[in-house]
Every structure is written in C-alpha cells, then in structure tokens.
Image (cartoon, rainbow, N blue to C red; front, side, top):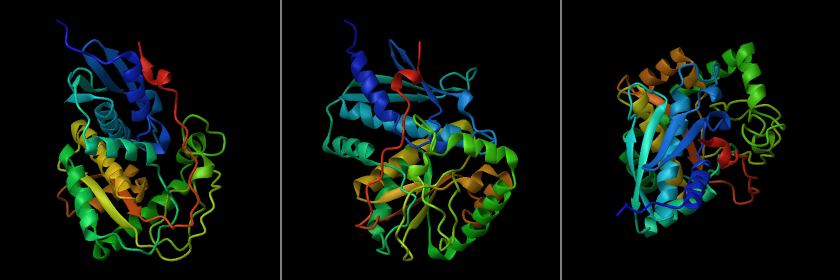
Length: 322
C-alpha cells in the first residue's frame, strides 16, 4: 500500500502560506517542485539582488525563512515535514527536499499558524514599553532549535551598530547600481512583490540606527517618542549555504514566536550586504565568534497605530516548477 500523501489543493495552500515568509526586498526568491515523494525547495537565481546581496547570503536566508514557514503551514494542515537540506552537492540551488507524513496538529502548531497569517514587517517606531526579559528568552530559545544562534544586543553593544548602519546608508546613496536596483524593487508600482511605498515610513531623524531608505515612502508614522525596541542578531559559526539556510529557518521561527507574543518586528540587514561592514558587526558585536546572517528589531506597536495593509505576494502557481 502506498503511503498517504496530501492532495494537490493541500500542498498549494501550504505553499501559499509559505510565500508569506519575509525575504530581501520582498523578492520571494524561491521555487517549488512538487514530487511524488514530497516537495523540493530551489533558489531562484533570477531574483538575486546583485547590488544589495552580492554574496547571495540574504537570498538563501530568505529561502530558509520560506522553508520554516512551510513546516508551520504543513503542521497546521495535518502533515509533518522531514527536511533534508542541500540533498544534492551537484545542485547547490536545490536547497531542501521535504518529505511528508500524517500529523495531528497541536495547540502550538495552531498558534504558530495563526502567527504566520498575522506577521508582517512593521518599520514604524515602537512604544517605549520594555519587552520582558522572559519574552526575549522564550523567543531566542525557541528560534535557536533550527541550527543558528540568536544573540540579543544589549544597550552597551547597540552603539556598535550605529556606524555600520550609517556607513551603509552613505555608501548606498552614492552607488548608482544599488539605487537602480532599489528603485526596481520598491515604490508604488509594486503589485505582486517588492516593497510598496504604503508599507514604508519616511526616515525618522530621531533614529540612532537608521533604517534602509526605500522608494516612494508613504506610510504615516506618528510615533515620535523614543522607543524601547530590542535588537537581535541571528548568527552562525560557519558561512556556507547550509548555515544560511538554517539562519533563515531561525529567522522565521523568531518572527513567528515574537508575533505569537504580540510583538511587532522588522528585519534590518542593510550593512550585511557590504562585506567590510558585515565584518565590523562580526567583530564589534559578535567578537569574531560567529557570522551575522540577519538582524531583527522587535517591539510593541503603539496602541493607536493603524493596521498595515498586506504586502503583495506572488501567485503560488508562479513559484511552482513543472
């Protein structure tokens, strides 16, 4: 007797949920192949951002986030994912094979599935209300189950992030290739991918650590008080594709756990695309013990902030290969 397998409708629902994962400039740089034995995840090189992500680390992290989102989606839909990372050394863009077995969803599965549907990047200022230390511990420990390490950046070290972020803004402002790429992937014209202007606030002059400047910023951010956001760095002892894929899964797990606890979040990765600035962060914040793969800012959204519109996503059929 053949082992049970999900229907094609179930698989497409799971892949549609996985597509809600965060990705660099919302490029959604993944491809899926549906096989008799399960699902394959492939990197989509046509969506590689050469100027923003020259070494492709953030592309692979993005795919890892989609992989974890898929795990969560499948669990809610009654399937357990057995993941083999990088199954074929001859095909480095074949990032994972996912085999499926029946699974009874748990309460934790259901809560993470709900968080997956609620999560979005919120680049606005956060409240001055501090995050309980227990929340930070829960977020970090749950996320680290996927093979990367989560490091909280305390106030004493946060100043060491200021210069790399400021330098990245200055260098990118003078880089025509970067500016053309950013204009192509952000602004009001984006309808199925990219970063639309309605989800990006104008730069906050009061921010000590500047955010990336996207095109056509049009989101109203009335929060003017200093916030109590916390910064987390997801890092790995090595810097190969397997490490980056694990960092992506850890990123997704962290974001969903933060959402489950009622926190908002956004990824902050601009200096990581510049090797020398990434090295600065590795030395100054991680003491040369690990490679930073992504950084996340979390906090409480002001109670009077309006809900954000949904960020556009590609149709799932457009991400599936025959």
